[in-house]
Image 1 (spheres, rainbow, N blue to C red):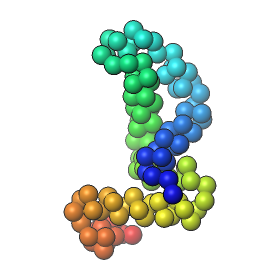
Image 2: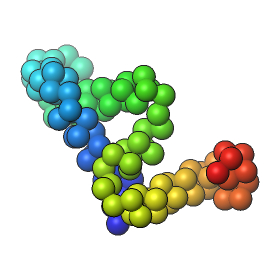
Image 3: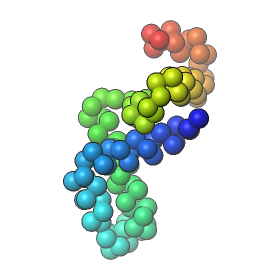
Image 4: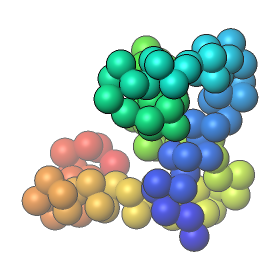
Length: 107
């Protein structure tokens, strides 16, 4: 099964393919752009791709990880399992039991 990081990378790539003008802007970044920020060009391109994805999901008022899993996992059963795993991890990170998390989020 893919990790949440795997789903994120796949979904972000799908997003950039769906919005080629954004991908072209990111591809047009130069070494001097990166140097001015004190990072490498690949780091800058990765940062800008992350920012574009984050802006998109924020604009659509989506949970970026849930949307990434739904977008990147064609198998609905695997998507449901990945979403549950993500939500359980989220509950644990919040220090809330799974039952309490489900109640609070009406799941």
